[in-house]
Length: 315
Image (cartoon, rainbow, N blue to C red; front, side, top):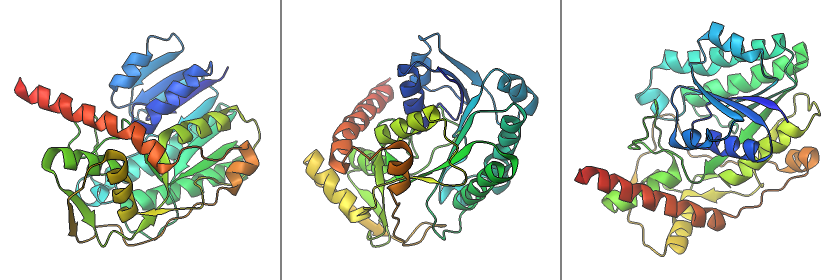
């Protein structure tokens, strides 16, 4: 049994990680700016608690840190274009970089056994989210190398699955953001048209969220200090945006109406691949979910969200 602080635990990936930690007997305290429906439902268990806090509320967080010895730090302001067009740049830097450094210092002060922090693939995109995530990765490695804190960066591709938010999502979350698969599904349901940025040939690794939560569980339970090595959550194979459209159409048995527009601010045509060897080497894990298997579990969630939204509008 581990005592785990989970920041950003009300979000998409966080709720899945919280579930699998509880299923495996661990104690979890979720720190977040909001409490999601999923976290509220998990509170039936005595092994999970929720505290509404900002990562900058330093004194309160320090008091909490004393009672835990593992940290999974997911809290961040997300969004490739949104961190340019929508959110305040200073807030993004303050939350993502300074907030992370504060937590790393506390983890060192209270001799935490393991700290896990997600980062993003190495691409030369000039947007605040990517820039701050790169800085977070380097600071996390610094704390391992210079301060002997057992930290590991988990480099994530494009994660998808049930519960991921979209720009118009009404979950009372402090921030929404635009991600490809929920956007394609909800835009098809609401306006029968999807928007593709650029020519749709840009490629990324698309990873189902159940694989991600399993990897975080294994890393929490793995006592080994991996030094500055980064765990890539990927397969070494990628898909283009057009591939994603084709896969959705096959699984959904539905034609998607495509509108092509210019690339969004802060992102450029690129190809993302992640080496799966560290994942296999250190925790003996290979990703289990294919793209189409993951889509079969994902699509019904958004169909249900669409129906709930329609019902709310009737009243």
